[in-house]
Image 1 (cartoon, rainbow, N blue to C red):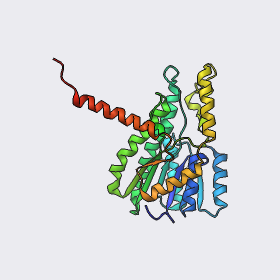
Image 2 (cartoon, helix red, strand yellow):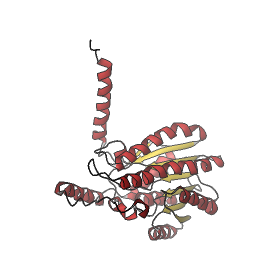
Image 3 (cartoon, rainbow, N blue to C red):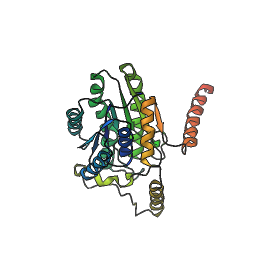
Image 4 (cartoon, one colour):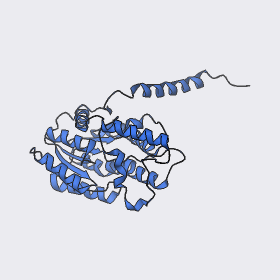
Amino acid sequence: MKHLEGRVAFVTGAGSGIGFGIASALAQAGVKVMLCDIEGDTLESAVAQLSATNADVAGVQADVSIKEELQNAAQATLDRFGKVHIVVNNAGVGGGGSYGSWKDSVWRWTLDVNVMAVVWGVEIFGPLLERHGEGGHIVSTASIAGLLSASGAPYNVSKYGVVALSEGLRAELAPRNIGVSVLCPGLIRTAIMDSTRNMQARYGDEKLDLTLSGDPDQQAFMQDFRARIEAGIDPLYVGELVREGIEENWDYIFTDTEFEPLIEMRFDAIKAAFGRIRDRKPKH
């Protein structure tokens, strides 16, 4: 999608962090943007900030883990702008917990927000992108953890799912003139470490303790990781990369090369496993 000016975009998790960075970059390129977020005050502030630049933007509050609310947000976008060309499934949460500390509530919450909301985003908005015949683009936010899993945490599992979904959709939707990109950011300066603040009451009181106060080693690790996030890449820069990725129809959108060697090690291990089968001699 080479020419973005005058197009319409819908961005989830747009009140702050990467979502706001994407909304800002698109708005600066002349795109009309509907910002969607679960936090009303944050959303209102984001819309006001972009409106002050004379950008054509609006906001709709929605919990994307509830399909009906996402459908209502899609209708609000059509009511405000008439059509939509770009969908950014960005809203996400940082549900964690390694083996031995899993909680059903965290699994359900993480998969609902990080996976099912992306599935519904495609299901609901895909036909709207096809309807006008002007082409479209879908960006879904995974993570570098969608290509490199350091544990069996719900977050990593969910992000692998977003990568798989995006890779398959890219081939499926290309003949329909819809591009698909998956965003795999590294360490970005966001509030993801505090995402349990938005864990809905319907998931119960069994929330993940990100402080891990009972395990000094894990607590030290989480404190270090939080510090790295707070010193991470500017989300506005990530937004510029996503804008370029949409214009150039990138398949994968990375934010940096920090984890490239580790991903190469994973690919090397996969190739070696194929080699074992290729070179294996049958046992008698």
